[in-house]
Length: 295
Image (cartoon, rainbow, N blue to C red; front, side, top):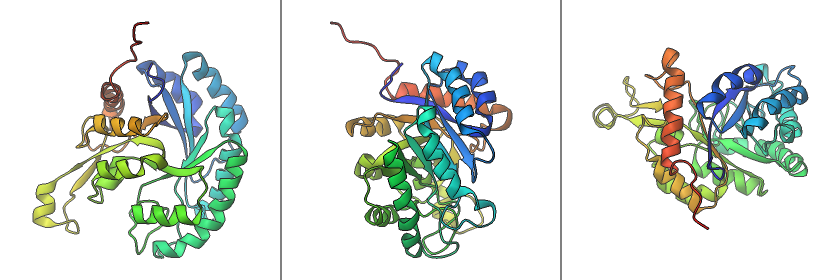
């Protein structure tokens, strides 16, 4: 196993005890446990114990615990999101993880800059809480359908927003949960971006994109035709060997966890077929299995 850069996948935290034993046989080396808006009434300490019993014996790690909701508003279905961030930070080390990730949240339908004061208030405190527990915070870079001017869920989808966020909360233990897909969906070239931002990348999601440049050139990006599709790695446009090279050149020691359930072709009954293909592809992009040098 190439332990300095593991390849894994995302698993729903509520289903981790059931799902991980079924899929770890395929060769996943890490699992990112995810929760949507809330950890609910799940006993995180007991779940961590049961998950560790499954993965530790196989040398598999839990790379991150993630909460995807809007912790800045605390309204509606997001009422428990901030508390779930706190619980995830408090329990991350029980899973063996040192990263808690998710969306920043956003003041609904306000420009990104209007959310920065609330972001500073919430994540300034969460960053201190995380630092006290040896945990890093990583922000997912999905726009969730938002723009600079309006949206919900997340402000961390644009490099200008990243600069504003890290100026507002300059703590060393906050960074990015990065993937090329979400930048490509905005027609941003992910490779030069990663060269610039790699020191702030704490966690990487394995998700790619395919851009239909013929549609962009004929219909633009605001017409009725889709011009970009989220893809499982190995089926999209990105050179993942370049991404892994840049990560390693910057001392990255984390994981790339495949984010499935988005590919327009490798879905439904082909979901795990696509994910296992991505697993093998990414392992090849990192150079294959570790081979020790002669003594």
